[in-house]
Length: 347
Image (cartoon, rainbow, N blue to C red; front, side, top):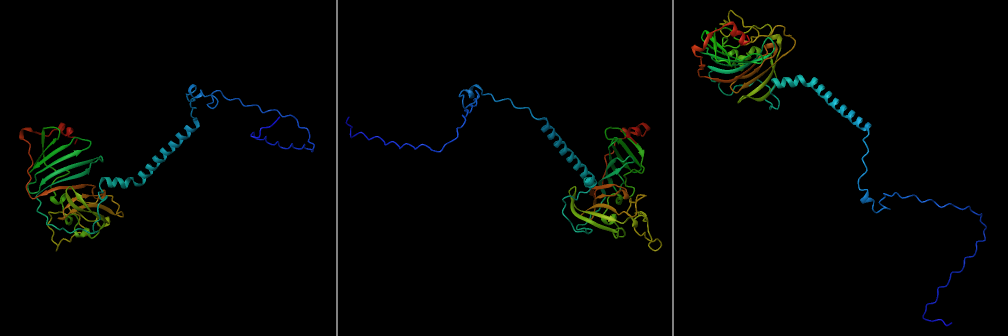
């Protein structure tokens, strides 16, 4: 048969591989590996798995051991915070309480560490309004708000008591009228020595710096801190003073009405101003610290006394050279004081 020349010739066959002449040991037959079954819900082998089994498997329940560890750790944090607050209260509580109750020098600009010199003249003081914070025999704080005319002796006092009814007292000449602020009836009583009165004169409650600290006392007083402050609307210098009590224990109070003859009556070593006296039992080795706020005229606008000097806080609200006349109650609403009224007053 003739071959067509246009047809490509067949590929030449590879020469046969010569047989391996090396003898080999006969091998045992191997078992074929068994194919692993494919899960019917596998998305790889089952295209309908996604649509038929779209719901996710239910979540496994939380381990109780992990929750217990978290609760224990939370309690440890709470106990640590409580312990820190208790430690801070123990270490800094008294200092914070002192600042909250009287020390207003927080964030106040510093001032020269010296007694200030008046820069404006002090006008004559005929009447004044001030508050006095005192502790009664039960330890509760009572606030007296007083307006007094030092020439006539007229005064009006409101007593704010925490555990008893508030009172209002008006004094004139040799008598006084008293009532509860929540009742219209007044009761008359002979004028006596009230806790706050004007029998000691103006310098008992409203004083200049020189009247509060005479030169003999100032010689033993040390300014431990001075800042610029404000009392009400008056700019003041806040002085923190420390006084050696040994120079005050033997000093009698000064009587402002007494006539002293320097030739026959020697002046006391360290006189105290009117109304001030060292409390019996005061430790003579512990320095006495007091806070004084002085305005530009040299008037003491606020005074915080330690327990060793009575513990009062006196704040002068206003002073005036004008007369003060209180609003006296009508005679028809004034009744004689009775024992029942005293019980109602809480006295």
